[in-house]
Length: 343
Image (cartoon, rainbow, N blue to C red; front, side, top):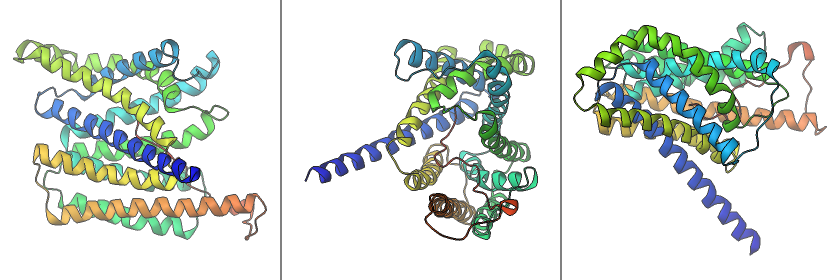
């Protein structure tokens, strides 16, 4: 009886964690699109910069003031040698995401982001010379096919937005791969990650944002009618972006890897549906099919990775199974078993 109660409590906790994660994630995406489209604040670098500032302040308050998480100490040398390069890629990833959102619909942008597993595997194979078994490659086929179908049938296609989203996938994959080597020895949670990376990202983005968008922002401040409420919405998006990191931390500790993978793909579907209901961007039937195929492929890919990781764990603990020669080791893609959305 006691075990059943604990099981029910764990299930309820997992469901609540997933729902609040969906809520924060979808809300941040919708508000950002609203800022670009409805508020006519067409400055993705500045929006990203505001997000980094809010996240820097929020992480400091969470760790130093509220002490919700213990601070993971990193010496000054490692901050510049390890954290700074990660922050640079992290900054590029977030900026490109907002740039793509500025030019293409949420549905298309979210579908393209699902291409990240494929770019991660391909990068590791081409650059880092890692080998993967055929099941990994086979699981990428529906992802690639779905992305191609979605791109060809997208009614609001924009070349610049599409390229920004694709390069953003490469940046996400690069960050994930570099994290294994640069952050080796540090067990960062999402809050500590933001605590160290957001200030660096703010510093990195300050000059480009001012040089490229400064005059446009000043002009917008003088010409837009309701500046006060609009600025409140922009700052709110930054606060919610930080809250998203807390929700990621919560959901990671409340769900299994498989549940997290399925919930992540369903989250994309929810974001696509909600964005369509709000912005009414045209979606053709074949475009919807392409999006669905991509999400199914991502779910299948996550399931295959889970099976392979279980097999590798069994072999490592002496549970039997054929061993692979070290020279041709079939690696597990570094896409983080429980990797969530960033700022």
